[in-house]
Image 1 (cartoon, helix red, strand yellow):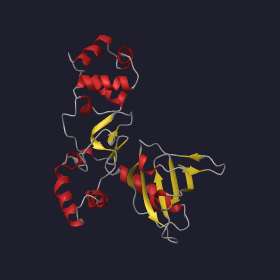
Image 2: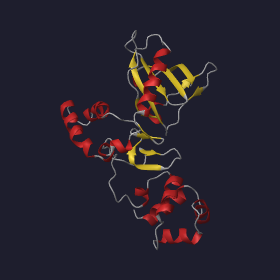
Image 3: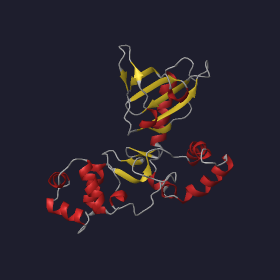
Image 4: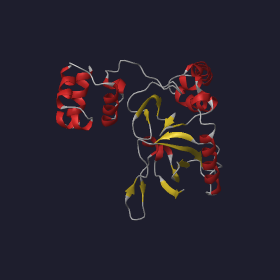
Amino acid sequence: METKDIILELRTKNNMSQDELAEKVFVTRQAVSRWENGDTIPNTETLKLLSKLFGVSINTLLGSHDKLICQCCGMPLDDAIISREKDGTLNEEYCKWCYADGTYTYSNMDDLINICIPHMAKEGFTEEQARAYMKDMLPKLDYWKRYEELSDNGEFEAFKKQLIDEINALGVEGMPKLEKLNALVGSFVNLEYRLPNGRLVKFLDDNTTYLGNQLESLFDESICFGVLANMDFILICTYEENGENPELIIYKKR
């Protein structure tokens, strides 16, 4: 699709008139009309506003003319997994797992490789093939080439260590010692819990990236502990295979 068709489709899908769209991105109705007629395309700043408004990448607005990959892990990017800045704008350089709310989530290449290997195994890679592929590919990506420039001098790793210490200090019965926290997108871990009054609730935002891990119970191999946290809270739950029968154990504000 061309830019003119994409803008028209997004505007109509969101039940906006040309006047309403123009007001939201600070242009005239005539400018919107020219975009949709194919006479002009939005300038860079307006493309950024349209991207944030509709929740799609600039690449999508321009007809997906580039093949985007995450510059940290190499994953192909589409609008559903592109990372966001703190203000909600899309960052088309990274996926949600590698960059979240203005923060890079990986500072160790081997940790990233170990996270990626199980996913690559589902695509037919052996562990040896996956590790060799990632070892060759990652150093070519912009994040790792510019790591010293982009890194935060260990501040995020220190924050993760602090979280791990806080979680272990809770002494949850049956839960093994937590060693690592990984980046997890809310939509994959946003379980629904039943409160004592019978109400079903979710505590997470599907579009937010959290830190977490899954740990097998020390007492019952059919039960797993789920750990999730960020700057504001710590959540610990239990569940069975495929997230069945979740039970909230701790929800603690930090």
